Image 1: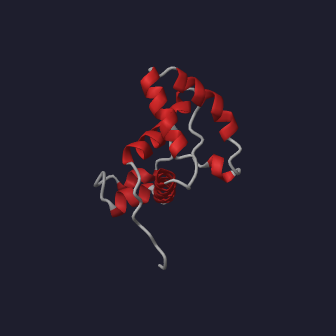
Image 2 (image 1 turned 90 degrees about the horizontal axis):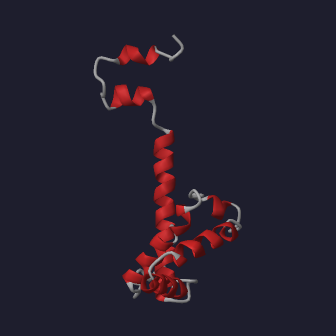
Image 3 (image 1 turned 30 degrees about the vertical axis):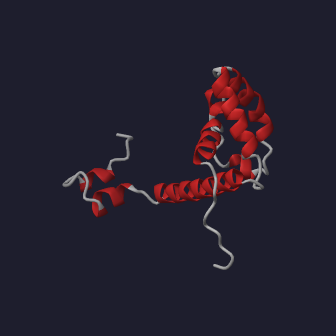
Length: 130
């Protein structure tokens, strides 16, 4: 890895607050997961209004801190913006790995590999229609 600078001198509180505040719209709308990235960022428009409404409901000092943090992380030109983007990428990679593991999970794996419900191997023949 050339030219890798893994040290980012960002204020972790600003990055954390911004990351947390990005979930404010979910008090009104379900989380779209990675759908926004999949369609090129077009869902942001849908979330702008609920995000603003949620911020308006916060105490004034908290709302000001959220807005200040968001302004400091709006793009990757600031240390906080770079740190936030790095945390988002890491979060998405971990989420994708979690979904991949979940997709590989089967009843057979639970009973055979993990040995859960020992002695219940014949239960896998039950299909729920009887």
